[in-house]
Image (cartoon, rainbow, N blue to C red; front, side, top):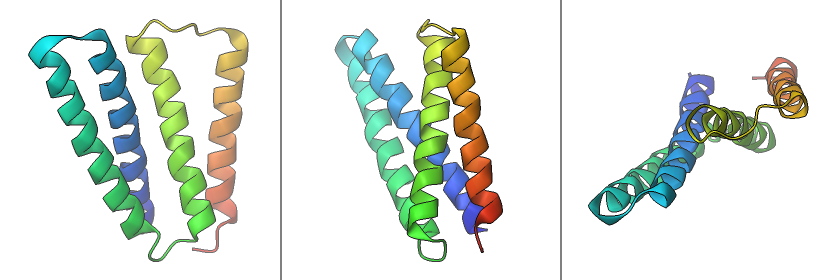
Length: 109
């Protein structure tokens, strides 16, 4: 169950970085709504990470949480913020995904 919580925490990390990017593009009241989403997503992500690390190894959990966030944030940047999707970016996204899967495989929990 804590692996699922950790994955959800990583997805909320993607949420807070996406909200930060959208706030940067916005102005007025909409900007503050995006910042509100950032704060809520940040709080939920951290709370779930804390919960997951109560039973999962801290180093593994943190690496997976940041990996999910990094991969998700890069993908959101490519999809929503028109960031480049060149060969090397995609290649290193896949190596990061392989590392996340590898950490899960070798974890004892």
